[in-house]
Image (cartoon, rainbow, N blue to C red; front, side):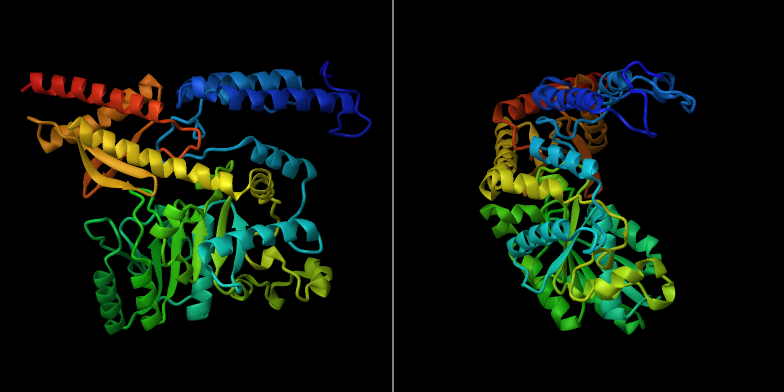
Amino acid sequence: MSPDMPTPTAPLQLSRADMQALGERALAMVIDHFESVRSKHTTTTMSREEAVRLLHTPPPESPTPASELLETLASTVFENAFRADHPRFYAFVPSPSNFVSAVGDFLMSGHNVFAGHWLASSAASQIELTVLEWLRAACGLPETASGIFVSGGSMANLSAIVVARETRLGGHDPASVVYYSDQTHSSMSKGLRVLGFSQRQRRAVVTDADMRLDVDALAAAIAEDRANGLRPFCVVANAGTTNTGAVDPLHALADLCAREGLWLHVDGAYGAAAVLHPRGAAALDGLGRADSITLDPHKWLFQPFELGCLLVRDARLMKLAFRVEEDDHADYLADISRHIQDDVNFFERGIQLTRSFKVLKLWLSMRAFGLAEFRRGIGVGFELADVAHAWLIESGKWEIVTPSQMGIVTFRWRGVGLSAHQIDALTARIVDRLRENGYATVMSTLLHGRPALRLCPIHPAATREELTATLELLTGFAEAGAGELLTRL
């Protein structure tokens, strides 16, 4: 028996003293992370061989001291990961967390509330409905709208298509077609494939010079598909693409969908939460005309992983799509069915029956900080992307590929004397050099067929000084790499 484990009176139990000690140690680890993360590298990783050596063990028949396990987590696991909540993590979409929400996650797990239906979790369900109401109003959807919290944008997008398909088609139709831009997140195409949509049913439409869905090209594709006997039923718009932060022309798309009788889904996993900020609301004008909206609080609402949200204009349609049919023989839900009436049961709004009270962290932090503080945090992302844009232009050494928008700017080394191929190779080298340096993380993306560096500084604790230092590092790496290439010519 481990020295810091009690003699159990029942399996898997700890004494109050041992729970207190373990909890205090874990709490200290989390507080230390929040206080020290800025002083650490933004990314750290290890080889597969090293990971196996340090972490692979046979199944443990006897106990290991909890203090030893926490030390392994502190020294090996948490130290070898991308720190997506680091103020200088500017890659992908950062996930800046906050301590109040971390406490919410702990309380959620500790109380282990089953949040699948009203009878089991009436108060928790009401909190979820309340937060959905806040987001519904912020997005400009009518009072008929509501939704559900899920794991993230991938599940929210997939669920939205299920509702759209049931509503517009009445079920699966091999002739049906979904349209989205060539900048749409890969989760959309993946979700459609999982739902049984063949490649010919998934139509990626070209974007314009600003990386926004080309409405004329979309209209032409819809007309052509109708003429060929296919059945268009859904258009997916972007409210802040992951690549560039581009917002598709929402009003024009809503008009087109209204004329054609199509469902308009807006993938706002990255950008829709910015509607809380005046600048975001202006950029997202028309968002409230959507039939469904995806947004991810674990991005620009500063929540820990995982938390996504689906909002549907007419929430009743979700029950139509996800209802449990009588012939599905869900006999174990008979007692629940007797009490359903007008109660909201979230298993009838999504795929999961067993689901956690995951919205607790968002509710707790929104109540604890207030929306004004979230608005201020969102404003940091807009401001710092503008700062980066201005710095890059002033330097004269970088080409802006896409301007600062929705907290993202993309850019490429001008490379006087270098070919396009050499500049592209240099871009990958710059990314690697910065990652090896560890001060900050910036990754590349493909735009118009060529790599470009992409900066997404949306952490509310990010600063101008550290952002400028990162841009200076990138410039130094670019100059050194370009010099090496030129000496070989």
